[in-house]
Structures are given as C-alpha cells and as structure tokens.
Length: 117
Image (tube, rainbow, N blue to C red):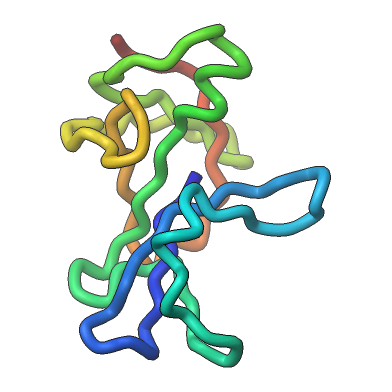
C-alpha cells in the first residue's frame, strides 16, 4: 500500500491506495480521503514536502506471514543482487505495521527478502 498525494489541492492531500488485481487498478483504503478530489487532479506518490515515498507493507505481511505487526525493519534485495536493510520506525496510520520510506527519486526496484520484528 502506498501513500498517494493530490498536489492540485492546497495544501496537498493524501490517501492510501493499493493495487487491486480484480479491478486492475488502484483502490483507496477509504473513500472519505478522496471525496473532495476531482477528475483531472494531479496525483503523485512522492510526498511534496518530504520528497519521499511512504509504503505500508501490511497487505504483503498478511498474505505471506498470516498477520501484521510493527516491524523494526526490512531486508530488501535489488535486481543486481544487492541487499540493504532499512529501518521502519513510524507507525502506519492505516494498519498495525510500520512504514518504509524510499527517496522520491529512487530508480531501483526492490523485493522484500525479510522482515525484522
């Protein structure tokens, strides 16, 4: 699940969305978060102030681990077999997990290899 931003609004407004394979599109976690949004508004995943991307991995945790918890960090892997660990310190506002942050200009793709409890 990722935080999306409507940057047409001032100040920018955020909502949480995840890919819905049934709809073949993004599904927001709460319709109330986007009720004021309009067709044609500009939506982006990069926080317009912090310049990062917030990710909530709770749907993956539920599917693969059978439950969701406040993880301390993630072990990530890239396509070139480089591994890295990132800390997850901030509680998610939409689940019982912690958020992972990535730079807004990040170009690499990551896979979650491990979850630190």
